[in-house]
Image 1 (cartoon, rainbow, N blue to C red):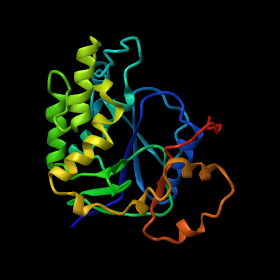
Image 2 (cartoon, rainbow, N blue to C red):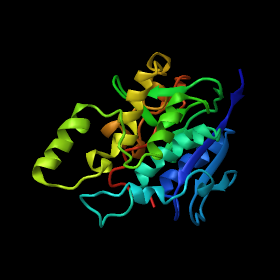
Image 3 (cartoon, rainbow, N blue to C red):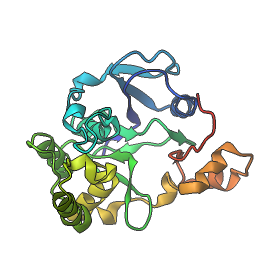
Image 4 (tube, one colour):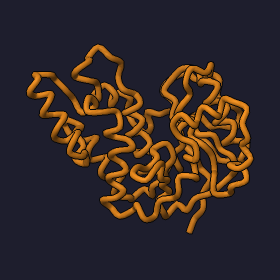
Length: 249
């Protein structure tokens, strides 16, 4: 059993938001070994974080293949690109993945020979915090999908696999996989794969990183009592995925 405190994350380009700088700083403050992958200039990265070239993991051109057929004028979906990027980081042994807006409360290590998966709710895994050993079959599934001609995942449920494509065809609307929903490569698909391979029984409780979700996360920007969370040793941090209209730049 080998323990590690290596963390990796991604910021495509441009300055980090305040919330991300605070979160990345919390990783360093807790003694984690952090690498931030980028594809351009990011001049406000907190001290103590190694910056690496994202192109060594995946070519950014993959995002162009994910463009919406319904809205071809839209920018490439970099959020969906990051869904593949984080899994490739696992396959290449770059360390546990945390989204840049995960606030860390305490240091921790993980077993590099076991999955580190956290339930966001009763039905879905969080996709902002994960670790997979390099030889995990879920990594293989993402590679196989990335190398496919149409990027159409084989793990979709009935609504996205059958119903939505049927409606698009009947209505004569062009579509691509990303038009089925932004989570087709993320929480939804990843949770289905975890069940397929029998990892659900090994997942950690939501309090690990998702004690507050949805609108409850707006508490992060208010004066509230954090002590119950800070006293809970099972709570390693919080994913600040809801930010509302708060000024974060």
